[in-house]
Image (tube, rainbow, N blue to C red):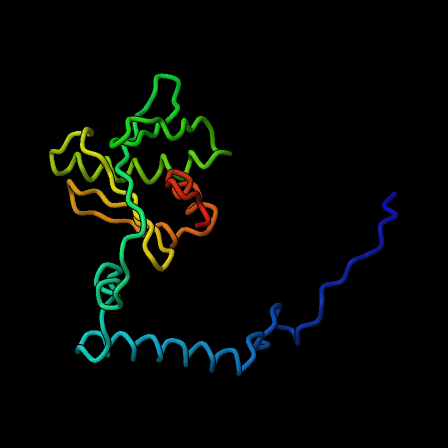
Length: 173
């Protein structure tokens, strides 16, 4: 014997579904304004009213920012998967990155991209990279062999610190 209570379908004026508008008008107006603003800004960039992008090297030169510290580094893989970071000028090993918790994952990812760029240009791994802390505190990893530069501050403080520790003055100087 079935003891479950009988279920009845909700009433929708006989149509089986609701036609109620669930998105408030102010939200739709804001979404439309955002689309219009995006299209306007894109158009202003296209016709040259707004600059396309701010190139960090150009901005540093324009504002007189100078290199505070530069280190020439190599990053080499060990058989156990660790990455060895060496200062080319002194020959000292600055770090051995074994896992993800020591910032090795971010360093590996950045260096994988740099190695791919070198491979596309037919350049080997021997040439060192330049890690520069600028007088304004920003940090750049540059590959002189390809000209590619990565602004490390754009990846957040933790990832920036993964590279900053290889400078003589430490991560927060």
